[in-house]
Image (cartoon, rainbow, N blue to C red; front, side, top):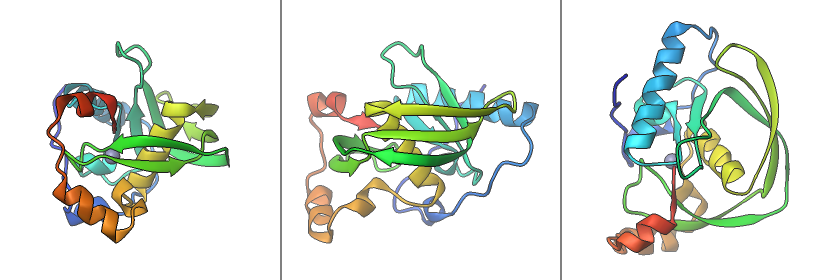
Length: 172
Ligand code: ZN
């Protein structure tokens, strides 16, 4: 296992649209293990392959407090969205910036699992938000893209150094 280097905004590679994974093999699973290790070490609750400069449709997430609920999603597709939830989001690729983002409260999605199996799953609340944030990464989109230019400017000026604030935000 290895800790991977996380690309940081405004690195143009973060704008790359990831391509579908074609084969789920040992090499891909080794990458998934490295992504989990990198995410837990950061620490964050989600990490997309795009963030470690691998432009394949793959993400990992774990919103538990004790690293007990790891999810690895290969070629994820959102099938349905409903409701609205506002979360204070942070991003491992935009360190020090936090902002409230509106997303679907509940999603249903399909993906391929680590063993190559097809999976359909529902996710609500923070896990659903995390999946939406990571799938955006696979499309080259960052959470700051949802904010108005004025708000982006304010966030740039308000680089958050308050540790309590960092703990309360969801960083993915
Ligand atoms: Zn992110």
